Length: 370
Ligand SMILES: NC(=O)c1ccc[n+]([C@@H]2O[C@H](COP(=O)([O-])OP(=O)(O)OC[C@H]3O[C@@H](n4cnc5c(N)ncnc54)[C@H](O)[C@@H]3O)[C@@H](O)[C@H]2O)c1
Ligand SMILES: [Zn+2]
Image (cartoon, rainbow, N blue to C red; front, side, top):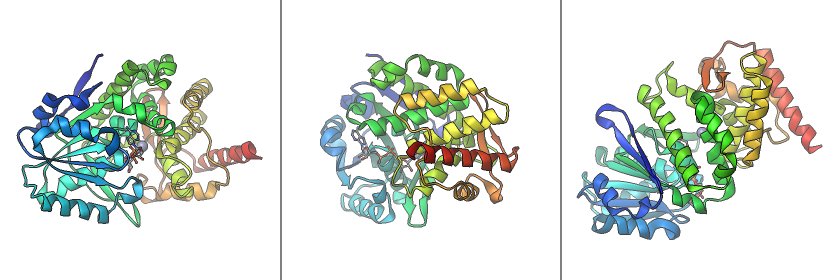
């Protein structure tokens, strides 16, 4: 089985991403990144029965603490974080301790934020177990917990020491979660890597079947794309390229908020958002109608939704898009496609055209359910 590694180039904060099969059992790989320091594993009640013992064995006597959190986005909060600090202190974890996040984006985000803040910052290693975490959330150093007033409102930039992505863990991922991760994978091709987009199209059946070699390839190329953007714009500065990673997300966030975060997974909302952004790019004369059809068919083929759920209102979506934190001062900025593989951040479009697009999409779902 082949494996891959790449580096996120951030000067003194650079770190490797290892992608492969069987990495969870690779004690020497963990030894290389955790060193002689003690380790605290953070995971959740779903992942622990599946993968905890193997990671614990690979880390051996370094393990000073295992903290098993409840599963779910609703537990990515300050109360659960506080319980994690308590456990670290009770286990007498010092500043030299390494936190090891075993799980999806929720575990990675809360563990990363604990690592950013515990004793003014300790090392951490990401062991992502969802496709979304392997291709997106474990890379780039954003860490956070939610506040009752908004998602990811309390956080810090804190880069991991290493990311160790064992693609075997994806075999137990529910189908919907897998497809949601694929939406982010497709995003990388569309926003910045046309050859990767073509490769996905040509290998869609193997990807859908979770063929191991294809998994390594999609995780590697996704991480390469994210690493390149993060290296150029680590902290998402105004006007920086990191904003382009939000292709499909301004539409997607509005749909997620309008549906109360209950109906759709994040990646599903992003899939719908990418179709809307692609269609809008076509209406502006940038990409072709055949491109839009191809993107829509690819997403639908992976089992992702391509139109918003029924009952949404175009005006409500518009005002949510105005309030999205990625659009400043009420002026909506959208990541659109100049061509496949080239995203641009644009506010250069007539708002009535956007309203018409939102109306067309909300009517489309009414018609589909009528
Ligand atoms: N830091 C970033 O840059 C960044 C980027 C994108 C998303 N995020 C965050 O990531 C979170 C979403 O991450 P996610 O999609 O991984 O969700 P998640 O962490 O909630 O995982 C989804 C579900 O899959 C389960 N699971 C995880 N691995 C599994 C496996 N191998 N087998 C079976 N079940 C498994 C989890 O327990 C959970 O029930 C959100 O909180 C979001 O804000 C962060
Ligand atoms: Zn996303």
